[in-house]
Image (cartoon, rainbow, N blue to C red; front, side, top):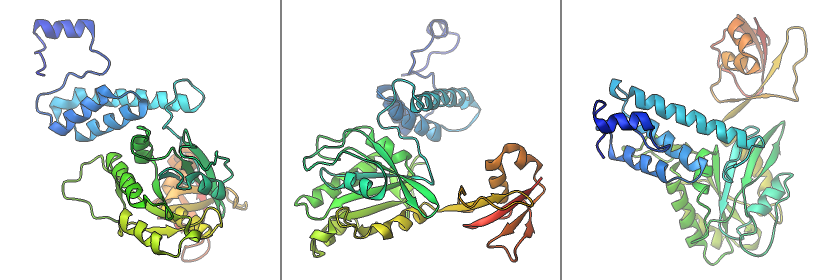
Length: 353
C-alpha cells in the first residue's frame, strides 16, 4: 500500500485521527523481508511475538535520512513493549506465558517431545519441582529452575512438549531469546527421528542458528547464533544403538551428550558443560585493604574488561576508575592494570578510583 503524501487530504486525515496501533507510515523503498516482519507484527497476538517482529524490522530497516523518523518510531514501540514485559515479569498482569526472565549465569531452554524427560532432567539438575507423569503433555507452561555449578547458578527452563499439532506458538520466542537451547531426545522412543525433525524445524522457525555451524552467506541480521546441545536421555535403557540413530537424526554437527535423568548418568559431566558453553567469567571484586567476597562472583561475558566490571559494580565507580590490581591470571599477584585489561575466569580485582 502506497503512503499518501503529507499534504494530501488522506495524509491530513491520518495525522489528525492518528494511526492504528500496529500500522506504520513507511518509506516506499523497504525490502520484502521488512514488509514480511511488519505483517507478522500486525498479526501477532502476544508481546513476545510482537517483540521478535519489531526487532527484525529494526534490523532490516535501511539506515538513512529518509528512515530516521520510522527508526525512532520503531525504537519507541520496542521500548514500550519491553517495559510491559518487564512489568509483567514483576507481578503485573497480562504476562506472556513464553517470557521467562533470565537469571544467574545464563538461561538454557529445554525443548523436547512428549515424555522425552525434560521435566525429569530439570528435577534432577535443579531444586525445581515440575509435574512429572507417564502421560504426554504433563508440562503446561514454562518452568525455570536453577542448576548449581561450583559457585554459580545456571537457569534451566522446562517447556511444554514439541509435537505435531501440539506445539505452543510462544516456544519460538522463548528459544530465540535464550542464551542456549537443549534438545532433549528420548533414545528409547520409536518416533525418535520424527521428534528430532520437529525440534530442528522449531529452531528454524525460532531463527536460532547453532553456534559452530558455518553461517550462510545470506544470513539475515536477526538470526540468533546460540549454543545448541542435543541430550540423548534414557541412555541407561539403550545399548547405544538408538542413541546413534537419534544423533544422526538431530545432526552430527551438533554436540550430543548421553544422559539419564533416572540413573543420573552423564549429569555431573553436563553441569560444567552447560556453564562453560555459555562463555562466562567469574570475577571477584575486592576493596583495598579488604578480603574479596569469594561467595558472590560477578558474572561477565568472555573478553570482558576491568571497565566492564567497574560498570557492574556501579556507574560512578566506572566513571572515576584510575586503575585496578589483579590476582589470579596476572603476571604477578597485585599487578596494576588499566581499565582496558581483559579479565580471566576467577580473577580477583581490586578497583581504585
